[in-house]
Amino acid sequence: KAGVTQTPRYLIKTRGQQVTLSCSPISGHRSVSWYQQTPGQGLQFLFEYFSETQRNKGNFPGRFSGRQFSNSRSEMNVSTLELGDSALYLCASSLIFQETQYFGPGTRLLVL
Amino acid sequence: AQSVTQPDIHITVSEGASLELRCNYSYGATPYLFWYVQSPGQGLQLLLKYFSGDTLVQGIKGFEAEFKRSQSSFNLRKPSVHWSDAAEYFCAVGPNFGNEKLTFGTGTRLTIIP
Image (cartoon, rainbow over all chains, first blue to last red; front, side, top):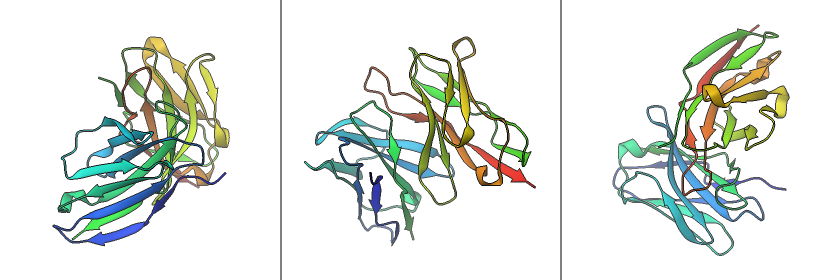
């Protein structure tokens, strides 16, 4: 069974731009969570989606948003990028919410 | 609120030596506990998990962890490390019976010396 896939793997953007990251969960998994990983803050939870509904949200500004499609694929969007948004963004999927999460390889975003 | 503490930021061990990585958690109920490993530039790979039952949990790559409720700990162990075990290790708690997220510790970087 294929694992969690994330596209693109690497991105370079400039301040003020917006970016969309994509995540395809493991087949059959219906819950998708997003995390931001930085050297200073570590792994921080962004949000979780299940059956196209956001079930849980971390402490991030409204510039960070996401959605989930009927096939469980998920996207997250960051608008008006700031230098501090440079990070590894990790997507994780699970069968249902509150179950074991399996992570993708991440998308590394660099904001210049 | 749930929290996880990994007191060791960096550990160096010799190849073939035993390993123990410490993890302490704070959680109001019976926790779900996880250990993940991350190689440079990669995502997180699940090593093992504890939900209930036997407090000694076996995982992949020869790792095991022991849940000790009285000490709020979930330490990761391996009897003999290999150079390929060099990576960063994260302990995590939750979610469980609530709308809570998976909370990670700050990680322990493991270096293996020949």
